[in-house]
Amino acid sequence: MTCLLVQRPRLILIGVGCRGLTGEQAGMLGRCRLMVGDPRHLALVEKMAAEKLAITPLAPALERIRLALANGDVGVLASGDPLFFGIGRRLLKEFGEARLVVLPALSTMQEACARFKLPWDDLETVSLHGRKALHAPGLLLAGEKTFVFTDRHNTPAHLARQLVDYLELIGADDLLARCRVHVAENLGTEAERLFSGTLLEAAGQDFAELNVLIVTRPGAEDGNGPVFGITEEEIAHSRGLITKDEVRAVTLHALRLPSTGVLWDLGAGSGSISVAAARLHPGLTVFAVDCTAEAFANVKRNIRRFGCYNVVPVLGEATAVLSTLPDPDRVFIGGSGGRLGEIIAQTAGRLPAGGRLVINGITGKTVAEAPECMAAHGLRVELTRMQIERTTYPETEPGKVLNPITVMTGRK
Image (cartoon, rainbow, N blue to C red; front, side):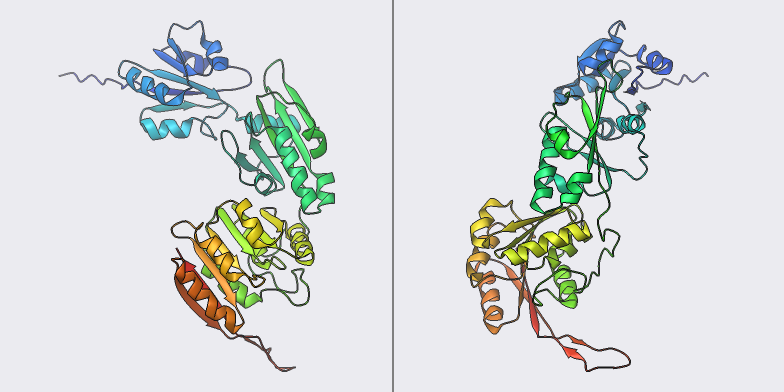
């Protein structure tokens, strides 16, 4: 008896490089019954006999691929390495790894870094292609080198302008002068163009739609400090108005911060909670709100010192500015200016299921009012009372007893 092994039709995923198709890639595509890609890539295979299909809109293209695989191999063409922020992830999800064959080229990131002679092993990578960024500077300044996939809305010029506006807001004049933008347009084509310049120069440029962006910045003053455990002495503050180290640790634990999303720090003061949260979770966007110019200046100084560019300082009364902010996942109220009830009312209704509101109370009035108000707005409330005493060993001076504080947590 002779057994014949029949190979299932394969989905051939081709990464097209700057120099076009390799011989191996062309040979595998030559056996396909259907080829799918954008017009730029399909032009490379126009003389092959297979049926051609645009990859957008994606949903009907995936259905056509599924039907065509019943009768033979199907080729999909994409740029560079299609498993690097490309169509490869979606095809694996739709069709599984068993029938997928991947022949990648150098990624667009590798090609761009080679052009600009930038090592890329320490590169942060951000995709804004088809995505809306809540606070783009927090993403683009997270590392000292960041590679960005752009699109027609998130253009290099538009992103550079956002960076300029943010760095001017936080008073980071040195960073604004020393940041550099590198844009590679139409890589591998006759229209290829390379641009390197300052943020202000990039903001005034027109770039081709097909481009990638690299942003470089110098390191922050204390960018290599501890991720968790920055002390009161290290954080700029005024007149002792800062959440004490031990209380800050308990507060962050009570907030149970997500890795991404939005934190409101209301009555931010020095911004110590904002800075600690931002360093713990670089993907979090933190809005540090305070109504005093002194606190606003301290928050900005701490952003610059610790490189917490995912913190957005907001000057104004909380009740006046909250309507302008995106809905929060977590809220911390460190100060209310006597309008605690109003702030809780505005906040509780905008928290999602599972969201948390944390309030630190020192005065008896706050400790009495806050839990009642949180409960009245549908939050489940837990209280933790803290008494902190600081001593040294050996005791060279009397110990210090801090004011008692109550950490009040409301859960949606």
